[in-house]
Length: 640
Image 1: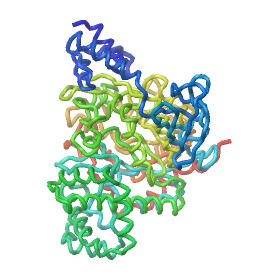
Image 2: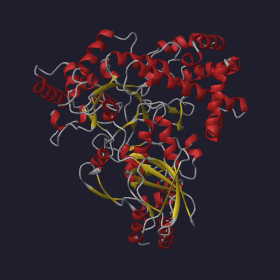
Image 3: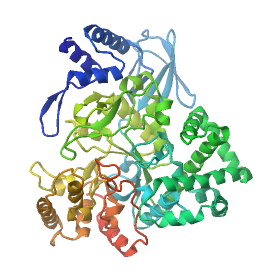
Image 4: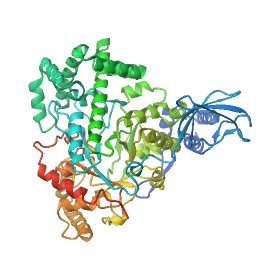
């Protein structure tokens, strides 16, 4: 068959036949990879005839009326109606605006953002989303020039009495109040999406359903009261195991899951005797959740080996308990003085066998997994084993899966961090069972996705942080900034082309400044070269501690030239990051507590204690106060 026809189809379907890696080297994707991914997109390409037929179908689809017209405030809405035809435009409250199509058959620009329904003579109803020109931002709540700070926390690492050794919303609420007392305005969390039962491994970035919450993080005492929570725990007979798990330095996910669900089951059985107020609240939650909640609950119950109605209602009850727990945690954070409170983390994809994939089968991209091409951080590339939606599927469904997702993660939050926001433009897709290097970039409808993100951001008054690390296409960061999405500047990556650490005047004004991430070494671990030792131990590369010592010296020199002194103290490194031009600086709790091991070591599963490490107990309040104070030193000020 002709490669020319194949490449024409691939380009039309959104596959980037040619791409450039992080080193600037050009690549062309192999025909075999293109055919496999095209097949997954439902565009067969086994021969010239199949390619031609798929290309014809693609072009026909492009001519159709979209399920959702998406525009920005002030832009005309193209409906291809009869010029001068009368129309009725209904907003979400049912208010009607009447008018006539312009001379080009369009609705003149709509002045208020929101969702609308257009009724026009001779046409089917048209759904319209009108987006603001940018996302809700820090300045919108705190004023121009605001410089705020906060902390990043792995939820499972935070200790709380009766947390089954895996953290919960109650532990987060206590940390939020502690951080607020030190002047912080934000507590950024690891993902709390609903997971499937653990089979020995766990990752918060491998969820079953991102629209629902992980029941294991529910804090019953926050919702039902301490007396009821304690009584149910005693009846469940797992109090001693709770204490043992709470005290352990590493999480045993399987054991913790078992005992936490034993408690949740007992709470569910006792709930018929709860107050009328609580039972009515659960009934409203259940009714509002509708079939979407029931579908999730049936899937979750089946995953746990039980499909009867009691098991399904248990899952609904657990979702209610989790939702109300996080709502209370956010309330306490704001009452303690935080301007934004909790920041959610949205994973880039989902378990292909999970509840979210089951709910939107017609929109899911089958037969491929997501990942990342080889880069300086991961020379072998990455395959994540997670699925996502296809761009064609999203458009065909009027972006309903994406809108549902945004609403779920922004509810009861002050903002959202979007993992791998580069996926709004393109995602690295790898045929199932293939190696990362055999993948191909698939384009996504960036403008429509970012418009909907801005719209939901304002509806929820939630700031947006986009994790823009890795192989970043030229111009993408500027485009994200234009839409009010904060990027992320990481101290360990803040270097020039020559490898030298950048001075603060080269850090971005439109990005969150932070010391490290969950996939990178902590500052103490980096200084000691622990990540390099792990790589050598696991056969992932040689440990060049000499080079690391040189990097440490270079960072110390950069810090010293900015702050004075010798630049060796950890507090000076924190001050350096915080003093940058970013409107928001985030301090990972691991660096605030001088923890050595990083939360996750990419490229490993069980060789490193990924997603299992708990914070030390007791916490050194002196150390915490000292590091919070150093990080907060230049925050809360207004730029001249």
